[in-house]
Amino acid sequence: MEMSGANGIARWVDGTIAVMGVAALAWVTWQLGGFLPGTMVVGLPGMFAVAGLVALRWWVVAPTGAPVGWWYPLPLLGWVTGHRRGLAELPSRGWLQGWHLWSGLAAYWLGLHLARDPRLWRLTLAGVGGVALGVGGAAIYQQVGDPGWLPLGREQAAHYLGRSAGTFGNPNNMAAWMAIVLAVAAGWALRRDAGANWRQRGFAATVAVVALSGIVMSYSRGVTLALLGATAVAWLIHGRWSWGRRVALGLGLGVVLALVGWVGYQHNAQVQQRIDSLVEHRGERTRPLLWGVAIDLWQERPLVGYGGGSFGDLMERHRPEGLWESANYAHNEYLNGLSDYGAIGGLLALAAVGLILRRRWRIPPDQPGIGLALATLMLAILIDFHLQAPAVGWLAAMLLGAWMAPGVGAGRETRVEFKPVARRGLGMAVMLGFCVLPLIQAVPRFQAEEVRWRAREQLDDLAGDPRPETIRAVATSAVRTLERAVTLDPDNDEAWRDLAYALSLQSFGEPESARSAGREAERAARRALAASPLVAENWVRLGVALDQQGRWAEAGPAFGRAVNLAPRQPVVWYYQAFHLSLKPATRELAKAALATCLRLDPWYDEAKLLKADLERTP
Image (cartoon, rainbow, N blue to C red; front, top):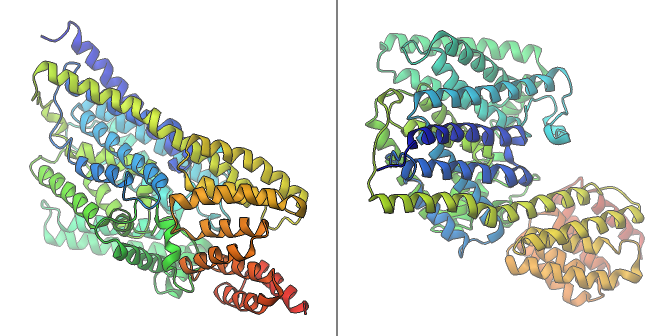
């Protein structure tokens, strides 16, 4: 027999789940989509706490039982967890990526649970709609007020100016988030049954208009094409319409879009630039090159992949000539996933999708717009990395869970499958695990990454500053910050690498302190190399540290290894050239290295200065 008042407690818990879920989603959405590690220090434990409360409701407090499909993502997540414990090339980044994926399970459970209660689900969608209105307001402000404004006091990147990103840093990610909201809001606005009254439909229509406006102001070509493609397919397969109506709607949409595109091209510089870029490059220039790199990486480890977060550094091994940009992701989530987790991960993901579609086929349709939203996202991630933004991933996972739930008008499914003691034990164990493990395991890693980001931004701001005293002061501050980062997460190879860089800069302009700084930098560089010997920059940092100590002969193999790992990265050739320029006997080799560097990047100013200096020196 359940405890007295359990139903009242259950209603309170359900309300708390809805409020906390929307709050966690709003938190990451309002803070650059969750890309900053500091945002996830709060957001990730919050979403996991929501999942813990869901487990409490399923198995402990007035238990409803876990809905069908609650475990479908677990085999894939089990592979991700095992992968980062032994197969990942960059374990620290594998942990960060793994926690991000597990947080998607928490959002999935949130939708799976709340969608069984019509009232709570409507309130949840209303909360998401309110967040969308705020994001849309920020996007409008970036168009009519300050185009460089971003949350958290940050400034928009120069190449995105003129394109609204809302509360996201990336306009394309905002567009993807808004496209998901648009599909669901439009579905509710057009709903004519008893499931929505006129007030709800009016609010949904307002949200849909704002979401559409946000997509337009983002000038995101990929999301726009994905939304149009998914909508066209949805119309073509709409079983209640005649084929004549379907074709007429498709043709009408095409005519309207062509007219809008022509007017926009004539009167809007951003539209003109985006279309001209497509015509000039016959589509995309950079993305296909990145896709080729991801395929090359996957072919090296076809079954297991290199691990989460590995693409950004390992891409240097396969960087094609003419690709000057660097990227942390392959701009294609499917290829990125293959390169990270191999064919085994891909098959487990396909199995989860198959189970979800099989389950969905058996449920009467009662969730307007969610299918279109998910289809749009599946198309959009063919050319971008939207799922890497927690705000987008969580919203999609929550809607996927709701899509899997029985119809909101069908009431609750009671699926209590364990004896009471075992059931309560399972629920309490899952709740405690979801509430405690992120605080113990994830939060220190995200804190360390946040600290590292701040220090790296300080160091990057030194670019072009010739004043030795400024460089030393900033480097000293960065060293203190990075030492805290490696204390929080001793496995963070990027923090060790950046620490080696900052330690080397501490002696800039002071030759008498170069040896001691070099010894400290060498220790940090070797810690980075212990994490991964396949990252070229780790070898560069070691070579610089050895040169500072006067160990020129030992530094040579380190720079050579860096060149082998990143043969088309101009920065690596510049460091090789600088090393060779230190000895008169190898200055001709230094000139040859500089020639390669400038062939790869003709605008590399430091390489031009070093070349001029070598030509003046007899």
